[in-house]
Image 1 (cartoon, rainbow, N blue to C red):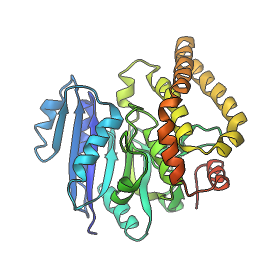
Image 2 (cartoon, rainbow, N blue to C red; image 1 turned 90 degrees about the horizontal axis):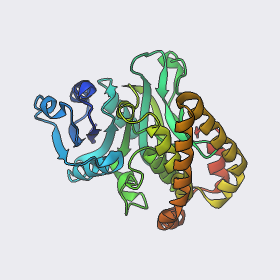
Image 3 (cartoon, helix red, strand yellow; image 1 turned 120 degrees about the vertical axis):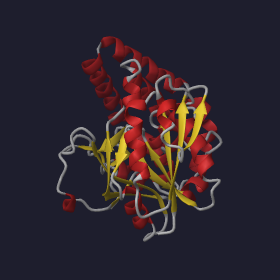
Length: 331
């Protein structure tokens, strides 16, 4: 396999878990690799930790740039190397099996039109549970991780599938797709999102413009889950999801898709807010509702993005709706 893989890791106060992540990246076999890391102004011992990894190409940001901009900066660095054909985004709380990269590259090089790939991502703390097999926008116009919490099956029971998109906790994008994707005036990942739903946005954009995403279960990763978010206020994650979900739909979903999904989407918002209330309390639910309203009020800033994306769309509405209502599985 000739395709070089650039691993990109964005960190924020992740010293407690970062070492294991980097060790796993350095242990990858079968493909040439390079590791890029950007630290978002951490206040913990990350700088001291990274003295143990002189081969990692590290950038130290003086401010927290967020997940989106941090990864965009690393992707831009990686693609300066003409040998890099694949960019893998890895959360600092994810650990890869040694053949993760070679499994995905080997799969991609046997096929054409590959835009992104994801392996079988398991719960780091309980390998009998799935963390993610792929991501998709469901019939309620909400982003969803397929397989989250499911019991892990024997590996022989899984097979590769063409899917809606991939989860950026541990995924791989091809250089060809990164360079061709429309609406990059705000970055490959939309930097207006800051964090959360950027991977859903990219996946939707890639899907409707004709790129294939694959779930490849022979590539195994282990994910701890939202380590950075847990260090913030408890409602931070649902608030950011609520704010950004409107942008994803406005930018990427054709009007017919929105109209066909409108009633389920209203019900989905109610269920979402009830879940926040149940898990985090009344105040968090109110904060999340305010963030949802703020996200809707921000939709005009995405007008040009919608124009560019819809002009590049090649998938018809019936096809998109079928995928959304089939758990994001194409084949």
